[in-house]
Length: 296
Image (cartoon, rainbow, N blue to C red; front, side, top):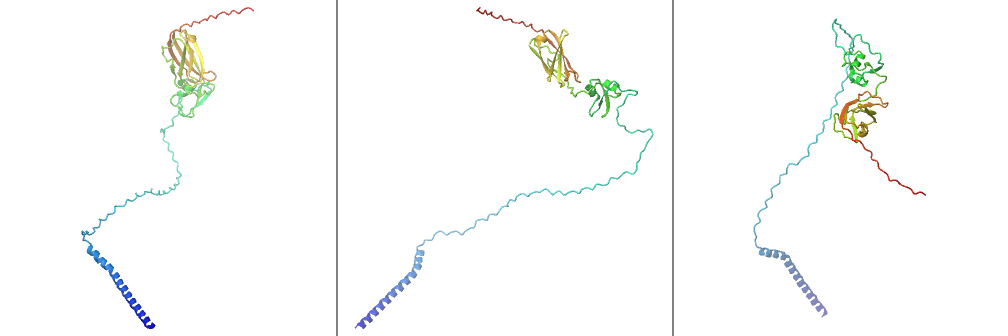
């Protein structure tokens, strides 16, 4: 009895298992066909749209010419020149001297002298001519005239002296080197008539540079006023005390050395000016009060 019941139970279980297996296989078949059905349904539901035109490619850009850097110019390498080979100087082997009677070549200019002239014996001092010297400049330097200097040295042509020529000149010692620039009267200028009557009159001039200057003024009555100044070319004069009278005055300036001796340059002047008489100066006397001290 129990065996029959067991067989039935086993059979039922096989049947149920077969049914379950068949259901699973049917479901699997449906699941495999689902994507195809979904695609067919989607295609049926789509509405046709506008036709997309075919793709037209854009024109290809043509590349332009690439700019290149300018060429670098390098100076050509100097080709060293061939050093010239000094050629031997031929030594003359033949001396030819031709003398034609009566024909004389060009001579070097030499100072012409006066025939039978003897240089001045009392001028012991000598001077050697330097480059760019002239006879007139030498004469001015030694305080003489060019004609006298030429005659003392037997020079026939005053414009012809040579470097190295020894000349006799006056004096005991060579003079100092002074530049004899032209003189010029600044104040009072030559011919001035507007000189003040009183106060101070300043004499200004230009001329050679010297250590000292002597201002000499000749008054209308013939008397002379003098003043020495050092290292300046001006001098102040009191008109009331030194130049009070009316008339024409004449003034000079003498360049002096340290020993109050005139240098080789000439004096400046004469220059003139006219002045009226200075008013008389009246002394003012101030009376002081008398103080009486009490007697003790």
